[in-house]
Length: 169
Image (tube, rainbow, N blue to C red; front, side, top):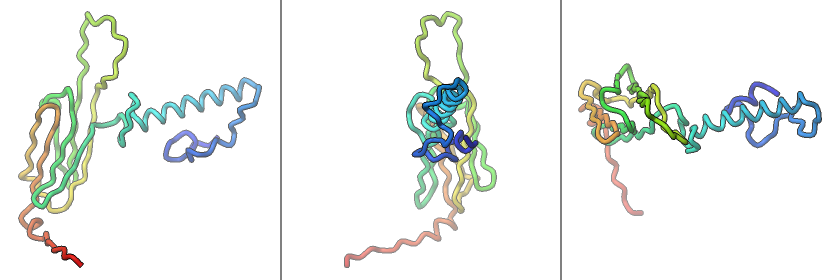
């Protein structure tokens, strides 16, 4: 077994590891198979999120949409269960970073909990910005669990946009 068999970006998902001896009767080989299974399960959960929902960022960040128009760049981030006091936005160079923390609220009387899929903790998300964005005029609003950041383009960047008419052949 190689280290590349343990990490998702270094393994070939269609091949089985060369040392996988499924018929070996000895306990050491069985232990190795069991440990390999634990790692496979862990990386599967990291890739697909802990609750089984597939996401390009797994469990490590909020869902984000970035859209660009002729006049601005608009970023929407889903942050359910958070308030605007829990969110920090900063722009540095050509990137915007959104940092936040969803705190756990524990009740002493909480009994009979059978399952909990809600996630808590800190996150940050860095989003690269295209050239020509006027960061001094950026605006952010938070409504119904969705953060919206609008970054207008500078007049110079808007002037460089050229429309090309499409004609029928």
